[in-house]
Amino acid sequence: AYEIGVRLVGSEMCIRDRQLIMSFYEKYILPRILNCACASEPITYQRKKVVPLAEGKILEVGIGSGLNLPFYDKSKIEEIWGIDPSEELNAMAKKVAIEECMNVNFITSSAEDIPFPHDYFDTVLITYTMCTIPSVLQANKEIKRVLKSSGKMIFCEHGVSPDENIKKWQKRLNSIWGKIAGGCNINRNIPMLIKDSGFKIEEMDEMYLPKTPKIGVIIIGDMQELSNFCLLYTSPSPR
Image 1 (spheres, rainbow, N blue to C red):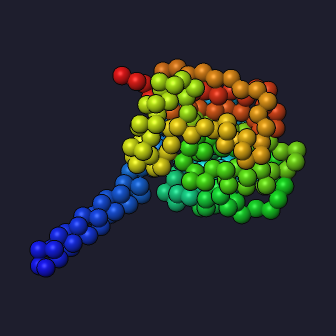
Image 2 (image 1 turned 30 degrees about the horizontal axis):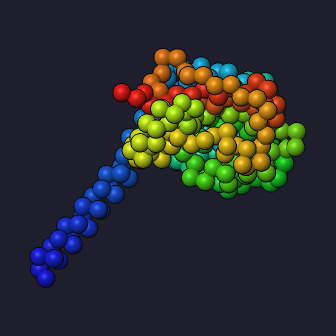
Image 3 (image 1 turned 60 degrees about the horizontal axis):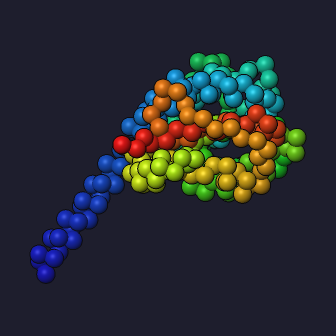
């Protein structure tokens, strides 16, 4: 009985230690890793293309560390809100907003329950976020709910590759990748998730990002008029 009790106590201590380590990692290390990874030159180039399209009353879902803020066309902003579940990333984004002289309203909350009335926003911007949201369909339905009938969702996302060999590697690596990248999934079928949540995609182009390891999928588009929609795939390189 003594030996079993020691083993149980030891096991509980190991679990508690792992939880403490993960909590420290997610609070102090992961936000900085995400900030650096999502600020790479090819990804920043995509931000520069989509962010200036936002206008009117704007909601940025998954505002993160504020990497999109420098690229807004400030003359087109009536008001802007940023929502993210991470207090640490919100704190980083607030510093960027001050540097950019932008009056951004921040909400620490999940995208599955957006605290706004129906038909409120002209634009919802979401970049590199659908990969991480636990319930993407619910979040996209919430986005659709808070958008005006004349509004648009502008997005730049990543997901499953169209290439079968790369898709296999994405499936193999996804569980490991999620643990080190804050729950990020590299094999989500973003177009299907968008359609299943009530949006319509009229046209879609696909390409691999230059100078970028093939470790995910990037999507650019406008949910109101999707004739210029572009899906940029990057995913794990098979070896």
